[in-house]
Amino acid sequence: MIRFLRGFVYASKGIIACILGERNMRVHLCAAFYVLLLMPFYDFTRGEKIAVFAVIGMVTGAEAVNTAIEAVVDFVSPEHTTLAGLAKDAAAGGVLLTAIAAAAVGITLYFDGAVIREIAAYFGRHMFMLTAFVLSIVCWIGFICAPLKKRD
Image (cartoon, rainbow, N blue to C red; front, side, top):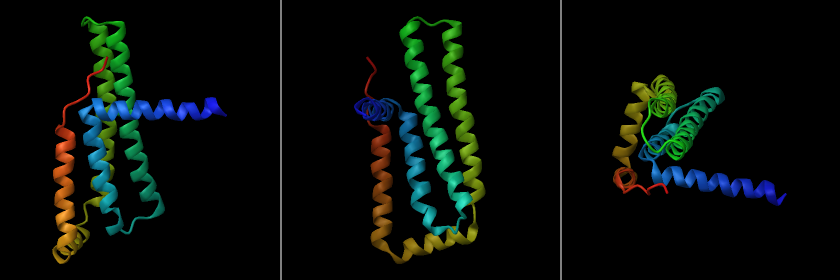
């Protein structure tokens, strides 16, 4: 049982390393935050909610795998080689493809003029929530732009 639980510790360390060391992971988390924050305004079916959670998991998971591949390639081939570049580019391409799929799901589900107007009206009526929303944007920008922790 201890070995099983230790696996969660190692996985958590990997997730934290991705967040601290990869700006794109921070961008993905920011997008996920706002997608989830705005979800209650929409009358999504269970399947639509599952799709949102699935694409968030796919994009952040792909970014973690990309980070792992880059680390292994850098370790095995510190000098730039064509194959090393291909491995890194292909992994990054996988992240891009999942992000495009997630954007397609997001646009399909969230681009509803009536709901967007309802969200704007809500924030117009609740200045505290609008202030908190704007403050969250400032915090996310600061987090995304904060210095990255270099890999050893």
